[in-house]
Length: 195
Ligand SMILES: [Zn+2]
Image 1 (cartoon, rainbow, N blue to C red):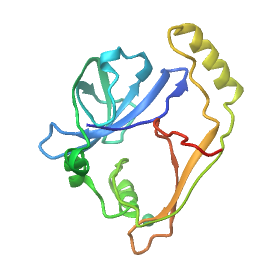
Image 2 (cartoon, protein in one colour):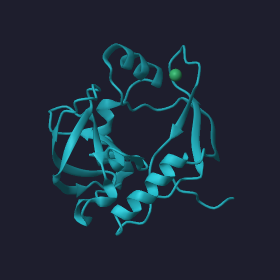
Image 3 (spheres, rainbow, N blue to C red):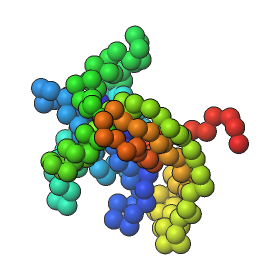
Image 4 (cartoon, rainbow, N blue to C red):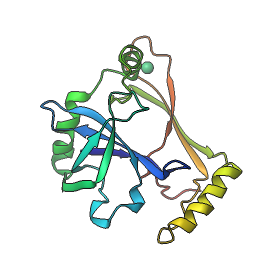
């Protein structure tokens, strides 16, 4: 079940690629999964999954990525099976998430140190801020890469630099929590009204 799609990154190795996170449902108990690279905009229309879709895809290990959740998808095998709806307070979607909810972000970070895990789900205890600020412009090398990829993939609109950076600050439920400040990289961030 797909839960996160990041805004695409440009790289000389992968051209344009997103990182996709989700919950793996084929292992008995739900498990975190990261799929990378996913050149989402280059996928065929029927493969362009929405969030909270269940997809089926063959995967293999990454050589250079030791995080236990990371898999390299063979996107030619990708099938979108269904999209879970929001009925009953997101009941169906949450039924897959619930077994993975950690007590706090601090505990997720402790697990990361112990076991190298890199994905987690938690409920913040208290939000202390959400802000957006002007983002650093792409360095010249990346802007040049965007132009170059534009020539290679002429049927795609050029990837736009996002002029804002979004950040949350919050405390988690851990007794020792000193507070967190995290960037938000989700592709679905939208500006609704306001300046
Ligand atoms: Zn914390």
